[in-house]
Image (cartoon, rainbow, N blue to C red; front, side, top):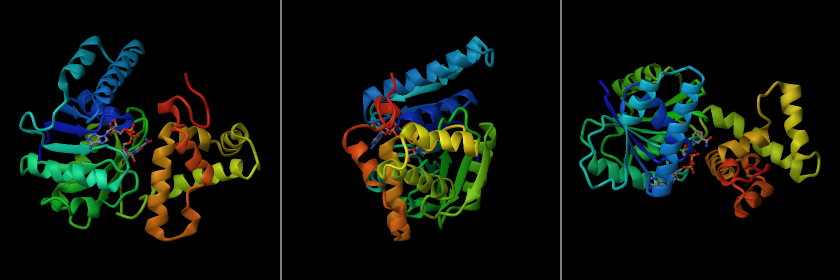
Length: 284
Ligand code: NAD
């Protein structure tokens, strides 16, 4: 199937990044969020990244303006008919919210549109089941920050067709990314490995074994990680980290995946990480 127009649902850090990479690669992109401020921030983010790319000589001024022209914000999902061939969702990591989004999209989108979710850990098959197009439903899991990270985890649901999978593999390549196909199981591969490490890092602070800075130093200097686990948790969003741990906990039924109480406390305090200006670290 040929994809020309893409719609991104959710203009947060991931949705804006996904909209950017599609627009930069020549696709028409519509970007929707229930929060108009998030939509504005999403558009600003896209502009900033294109500006930086231009300053570094990676792209010409024309490329920047053309990419911005291809990106259209959508304030009301029902105001105009949806025409996108491919719709990807990047709203909060909550199954009930995502299901509601897909139920609505299934009513509003043309029959040929493919649906994808950028979920970090939730079941693709369960989300697909609320639509009448489970064979046209897939997981396309971008990494953060989307413009930089090469990997896309491609996750087939039980009913996902070969054609849908093929189209998403082709899209991944067209964006200059590399796809790795994984099975529909809690956390897939990326977050099944990453999140328990982050959670364990929070436990070492919670138990007074080490300071936030020292935990990160150990992993950076000792394991050659580019970012320490707590710095990375801030970058991902501590609310998203708690949600993913809860999904792993529920999915595997193993207490080893229980979110650290300190991680929950940070979220309760509104210290959600970089996006909130405060998490384990403070940001300007
Ligand atoms: P975020 O909090 O930055 O953004 C979520 C956006 O969704 C917000 O702007 C919010 O207003 C919007 N939203 C909420 N409900 C909506 C609805 N019903 N319709 C439209 N928009 C709605 O979150 P994020 O970090 O961008 O994460 C989004 C998704 O991407 C999650 O599923 C997350 O697990 C996944 N993901 C996150 C990362 C990461 O590092 N943060 C990496 C890969 C995947």
